[in-house]
Amino acid sequence: MKLQLLSDLHLETEDFGPTPAPGAELLVLAGDIDARWRGLERFSGWPVPVIFVPGNHEYDGRDIDAARAELAQYGTRLGFGVLDDATTVVTDRAGRRVRFVGSTRWSDFDLFGPEGRERALRAGSYFQRVMNARWRGQAFDAPAVRELALQSRTWLAGELAKGEVNTDWEATVAITHFAPSIRSADPRYGRQPGTASFCNNDEALLPGARLWLHGHLHCQHDYRLGTTRVVCNARGHERKGEAKGFHPDLVIEV
Image 1: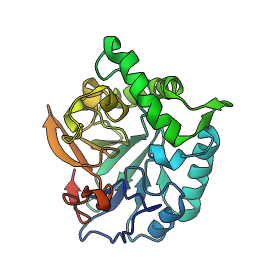
Image 2: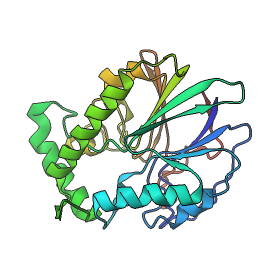
Image 3: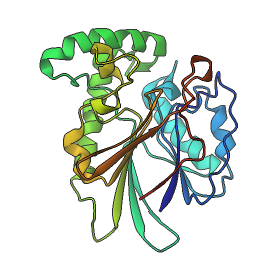
């Protein structure tokens, strides 16, 4: 199956017109498409199926649980699937079944182990204040993000443990907004406590997927860890020069 991958378009502030990539059989939107959601309408009627995994900015200024439910309904109205701790199996043109396992996967702030958690949580507090979201009647602060992240990791681990290949599918693709490895850290900023707000240490989960797609980092990556290929094709902010390595017509085969 040939996949087109887009993420971090930030259409709430950026001017970008997405177009279908030649030969792609499915479009993956790996989050932070538009904090206002209106930009998602550009993908309604897309010529191939669309899978959308929400990013953190899709929840800006909103209640997390309410927004998750509303996004799922909105995606249905637009004609594409929203995977937020959910899976789907898509059959490609050759009749091959590919399972997609999708989760926003939030930061658990354990990228540098338990000993680095407190510093990572303090660094992450800045991003949560900017996000200004709520969960369970309280501010969606860094400890709340960690709680939700651990729930998502447990779900993700359970799904990937079912096998990269199964009697019901011939390949597995994981899609998360947050990165699964420190290998995806933005080289502009290096490895610092704030990196744990962008990358998780999910390398132990990688063997459960042949391909792992993510966004969130405003840079591009394509590397292998073991048998798993990890790809990020984030556009980021053009005004900051982040879109230079972005490939709007990138097609990935799985």
